[in-house]
Image 1 (cartoon, rainbow, N blue to C red):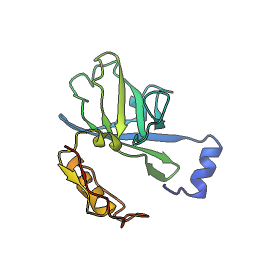
Image 2 (image 1 turned 180 degrees about the horizontal axis):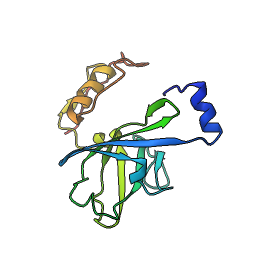
Image 3 (image 1 turned 180 degrees about the vertical axis):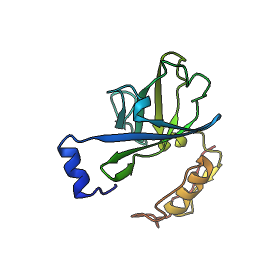
Image 4 (image 1 turned 90 degrees about the vertical axis):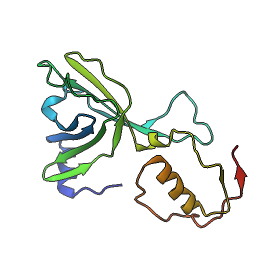
Length: 172
């Protein structure tokens, strides 16, 4: 969780001006998307994104970022958004808040309005684990193994119950 200043809170409560900037890193290099590139009213950050109506045991909620790019002049036609990493920030007064890191997971149709949809880095965990077995190690160490296998950075290295040793389990 990020803390914002009292001034930023007051600006938000008063309906004050905020600006959005999205750093995009993809196959075609770096790109900065600004508020003026986004069709008004289309920027959405959904922090409770699941598929279906039920949360199953072992399921993890992910956040989804979506917005529509104004491509009236076709300036985004040659940029390949698929797999691109998006880092959106919002500026409230003089304070800038990073909203997370997201991976574009749908190829947008090249029209005058590009619908961009991206999932947060939890989507990186949606892969087959190639480690034959887990167990006999602490939960913290196992999370480190998974983080390395799934190419994501852990910002918290210790957590409650992280020292518990997982029982051996053969996954093959």
